Image (cartoon, rainbow, N blue to C red; front, top):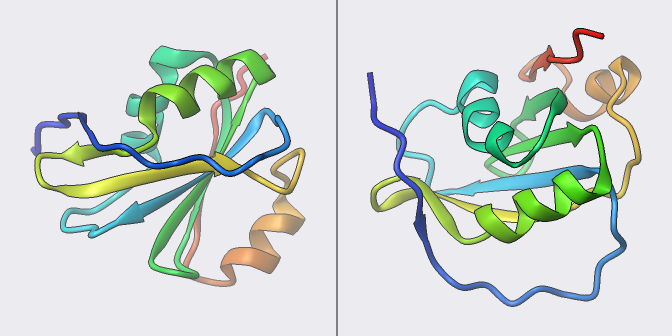
Amino acid sequence: MYEILLICHTYRDHEERLNHVLLLTVINPAYPITCEVIHQICSPNGKVLRIVIFKKNGIQAMVEFDSIESAKRAKNVLNGCDIYSGCCTLRVEYAKVCVIDYELVNVMGKKNESGKNFDTG
């Protein structure tokens, strides 16, 4: 089992539209990135409803939060952080979609995606 350790770097943000869905890009993914790993690093910032991981430009994940405030907090905390020491650096931006649904998963990820619904209510 690998220990998740967040080490932060600085990235400049572009002018972005607030959204409760975030797009996480994992830079230098030296270890496996699963929905559970993404949930573990995102959930301290708010309730996570859905996560989908896909391999389009490296490893990316979309994370849907229950509110814009939770997504904003997660973005501010996680952007530029390493999931593991020296690797798996996160670039976090607001997604262009407003909800993660199964049709989106099928279009974006094809057969190499993994997704998980954390909305239990």
